[in-house]
Length: 331
Ligand code: TXA
Ligand code: MG
Image 1 (cartoon, rainbow, N blue to C red):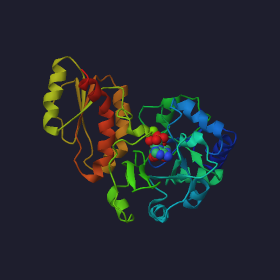
Image 2: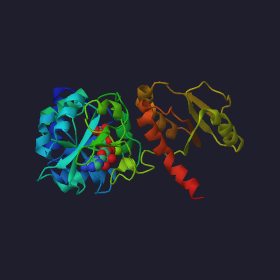
Image 3: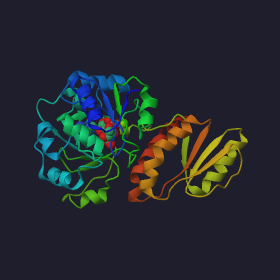
Image 4: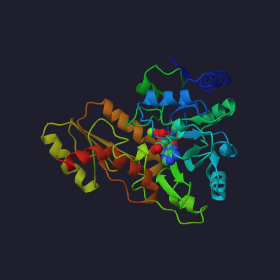
């Protein structure tokens, strides 16, 4: 069983795997990452082949400290240092101009690079012991749901990885906020736990929040976070009628709502989710995985509130529903 904890021996083993060009799945406070030595082009390429990820989709380089940004990025604006000081270690990725010598394999050939200092103590222990940058996407197969536990990583890759570090359940459960500071006005490319309002407290310029037409960010593909089971997002008032219509057609349905069950039939599994955005975000991916494992034909999820603290949850749910939406649009 390629599974390790956070003892010094386990971390030392993981460091050896990274130094020899192998992959290490490790916990962060957002989701589990599939890490490789960011300075080893062949190791980084293994990440792409293992995930089935297209080679032009850039990876985030994880660092132990903000000071290490200078090894990977160029022309780092003052605001990036201030943002890093306020939010790192934490669930925020900064897009900056890449330094010369950084491999095209990491950046997908772009002239920018994504950097993050994660807050999970095991990730930080690994980064400190390794002493370099760890390039890591989420530890899932391309297009699938990000893992928020070591068990999810094993479900994705079986025992084919040389090292999976178990750091428990991810505290945040949704991928980091991505903030582009590579030129022009700052832009959020992917919403996450760090909200535009929090970022605006440090940024002097106005923060563009549009994620329209963002190039080469897999998370911006409509169905990127999709479960296998068809999923539809509906206003609370429409859940019951939609579920009854499916049940009448003989289908089994899981309803995810903020309200107690309105239907009591064995073919309808009605789940109540937390009304707190952070708690909802933490459990969302595990929930979608569980539903995928159950014999359920259809998922109906209540639209979350249209408030800023729900933006990351809404974004992932909209993408999860995106595949089905596009299919029915083209019918
Ligand atoms: O929370 C997270 O960010 C997790 C943990 C493991 O750190 N990582 C993660 O990685 O979500 P991944 O590869 O699944 O998503 C990273 C996103 C992708 O959408 C990628 O395109 C974008 O970051 N990205 C990386 N470098 C970029 C760049 N130079 N320009 C624009 N987007 C970039
Ligand atoms: Mg991912």
